[in-house]
Length: 386
Image 1 (cartoon, rainbow, N blue to C red):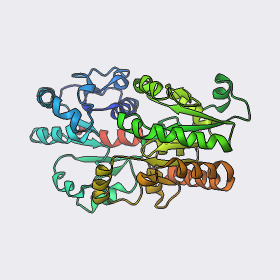
Image 2 (image 1 turned 90 degrees about the vertical axis):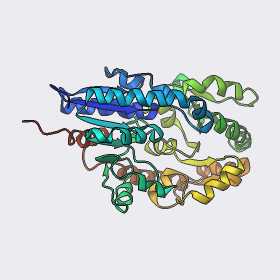
Image 3 (image 1 turned 180 degrees about the vertical axis):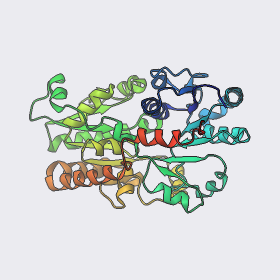
């Protein structure tokens, strides 16, 4: 192992992992200032003084079409990472999400005998449960974001620790509604609606036309409705081009702080399923959840997915807290009805908000923040020193 101050090697492969890695570094430094870090990360980790072995975006690939042309580069990056770990002999290795790369890395470095933690459990409880058979021996600690995951993995003979969900540290509940209204000249009577169609090309191409027609229908009933669309800066130009034909163009928001201000000002949200539902729930924004994929993908998903709900808030609650209009029910007519109900029925909106409070409580670790709980779990792997 490394001499002198302990060395923790962190590997993040995509933007969400980079955020988790940065918070983990801060939390570990607060507890053990002498700890050093190495590995692979992005801009957020680099803000903490972290030096990445190579650009993290080399690993941030989604889907077969993206991965196949880059297989040679990915293989080379794997060899570089294994060689770096072997040379440095860190005291602990932490891999964050990105299972396509990180789980292969954990298998490759297992013979080195270095304590290993994997942060963000693979979601095999939702589909492909048979993959659990591949996991014994890959890590010493599995850090779970969802409260039901440790029991699932225990059922397969794998120990796991619940450390809390990072959405609790996102700041989604800290927005300033008045600041958002002032910046965009919105009157007190204006009714902001959050639209979150996703950031991938396929998501945008399928959902934006449906959102556009839904908005037109809603505008007839609610003339003071103001659409607001938070998007990643990287896809903003693409979204702008897609909005060219819209009758009322949404306010585009690319800054995280302004997105949270928009949440605070919003009366309702129409969002794709995903982490966005947890952000909106933390901000107490009543929502309608939707999603649409091509029919072949939908048929495959129906056969392999084992969970009852698409929206994470419903999955955590164990019941339908928010409407889910998925695939055939993802239509402007159905979406209009459900959004209108939340705008017209204060009791329906209040029931969602009350459920959101309970759901958020279920995502909290037993003490402190999720990043602090994760830091404690990682530090527990440091070899005892004389």
